[in-house]
Image (tube, rainbow, N blue to C red; front, side, top):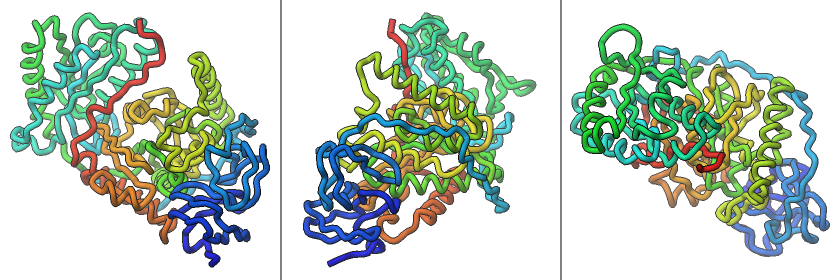
Length: 522
């Protein structure tokens, strides 16, 4: 029997697309009626995978989202499964048309607020943490030992307004050129977490002989206790506590000194109280990982709607993963507020082509095996779906990895596609809420920023309900993208105001911290 699009067996995203996406498994012999075409399905099509709506000749472009996602590597008959066995990712020209289609931002008169921690620099925290920051891998274990002394809940009885004490540990910080690119990145990332609006106070733990040594971090980044903690009880915010293992006399003595330093910080960190703050104080980090063929159909466009709603109220949103907008970057350059902003993005694209090339790599080697199993065929398809998170507002700036977001609107940050590195950069920018969409089931969290995980399909949401905060798979059933986006926007406000996410409840978020290293290890 024929079906209509309302039955959501398959989704046609644009009228001129020559493929549709399975909203649920489609058996061989099923008859689809989509976009004026009636097609009998030739073979089983899994959830998230594509079916051809017409004959596609070898070499002809395959269209999804109204854009090119690849080219037929052999003739494809109508009703056939369209995937890696008959699709290739040929290079093709994109018209960047800089700043030619700048959308208008319609400011909302609706005032939305959330209870947050107003910091002295004007930013607002959605959480209130104390951090133990390691400058180098050599002090990572010591930093973790200090934080471990605060894992039990006993101390929280006296300090109920502190969300926790957590360690920032990593595998870098030495074996790199002093003041070189990697040194600048690690210092910028650590400063972004130290000065984060969700961090009330922090202690820095170094070894003493590393390249990214603690005092250089403090001086080069002009670090102070931006949360407002004053251990002397008066005057300007204090410079942070710095402990070097070599100077303290070893690990055990440093742990005791670090615990004592944290204990000195807790009383004043606990004095912070949530007050009602406007939604314009939110900086939303947007990430997708473990994507599938429905990521760009459900969760990502819903996040785009939520981003638009936030920006309409004066907030900011930041998108990363330069390698995963590859092939779709022309859609952002047209929305750039100026040619200069658009050219900054393309300069990053060209750099990534060069960077991948010197290691004999290709950006279009992406997607991952899991992405492909979920229905994503080429990097172009993956990029177009990922870009749906960006909504429909102008691109106001392109920023470096871990650079602070300092204005409202949509930003793009240059990052790799690897989720821990990308989200580390996004959070270091000052993002106080993170939304992570996933089709395969990512379980990432990243302290000190709460992470909302959104499932792209109902079967995965039900299978991983302990880890998923919201199901956008309802869009494949009866819900509109707009309504799902509004649900997500409301959840963002609730989480910003203190509602616990699944990743927070599980306790993940420390091991995912991963600064980007781009240069040689010396």
